[in-house]
Image (cartoon, rainbow, N blue to C red; front, side, top):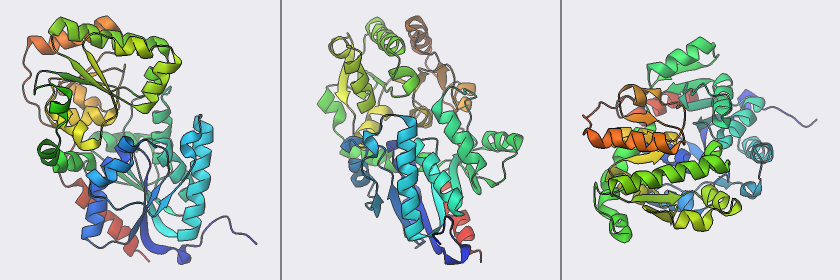
Amino acid sequence: MERKVLDGGSLRKEIAVLVGTRPGIIMFAPIIHQLERENVPFITIHSGQHYSPSMDAEIFDDLSLPQPEYRLEGVSTKRTHGSQTAAMLEGIEEILMERRPALLLVNGDANTHLAGALAARKLHIAVAHVEAGERSDDWSMPEEHNRVIIDHISDLLFTTNQKGLANLRAEGVKGRIHVVGNPLIDASLEHAGLAQSKSAILEQLGVAPQEYAVLTMHREENVDRVDHLRNALTGVSQASIENGWPVVFPAHPRTIKRLKEFGLDEWSRNLSGIILSPALAYLDFLNLLINCRLVFTDSGGVQQEACLHQVPCVTLRENTEWTETVEIGANLLVGTDPAAICQAVAAWEEKPHEKWAQPFGQPGASERIVEHLRDELAKP
């Protein structure tokens, strides 16, 4: 009879690290390096969710990561959440049944990690979730669905800080919770010097430190709605004109596609003050972020990195899972209304910001996470 679950005694004492999106690869880079340093057995599975070289392949080279042992094909052609998640669920399950790792490591809130967590849970493979417990409390966001579901089917939950711990306890999750900090901080700090020494992106774009802003936008609530996409770009353009500095916009492949579909391609390229470019390699983007005057974004990861590097942030959303960045005055939530965007920029420009203490825990999250993973593998 064909088995649908795995017997615990047949599992290998190794960890399967699941990646598939640019933020996830970046977050897991220091953990993978730590696993290598400590000689912990592991494999890497790539879900195939991201496909652009700058969003994927180049990151492995930039961050000195080993190429994944397994990579799913065809996932990037799927156009709906259901078809994409189903393809990854089926593909990851096949790999897990072949390899039989004792534990699957997932992070964040992408469809990749929901699919992986579901596959492992059904096979009785332990699931460990990095960046657990984050909540935007916006149930219209696909990312919110994913992070809540993953938390409730995970065995180990690694939170950034006490806020995540409180959220998980309030929801009554069944897994064991550990407050460890955030490995994205390790990744950003580890590679900041490398980015500034190796990247020539400022010279290539013709901008000088502190004399430009950066824009990133990719979430579907913004780029899949023509009104939100147009309003956000209009507001950023107006802010650029009013303040006399350009805005570098390394556009996500999804965003470029939507601009073309909505007939906004030529319009966006001619917007005053905006320098539109393809998505950048990670070290180039990190160098651009560290040296900019402020950042406009709808990305959770960019909100974190901006906060870490003392870069004022204007978030093009009505809410955020990183509420601590708002509480300490590092981040302003404005949505996509052009007037609100300009007002937020004016607030930053009128008063130089005082340095804030980063709220994501102490560096070393990767070491703490690997310690817990080793303990899990050591169990009989």
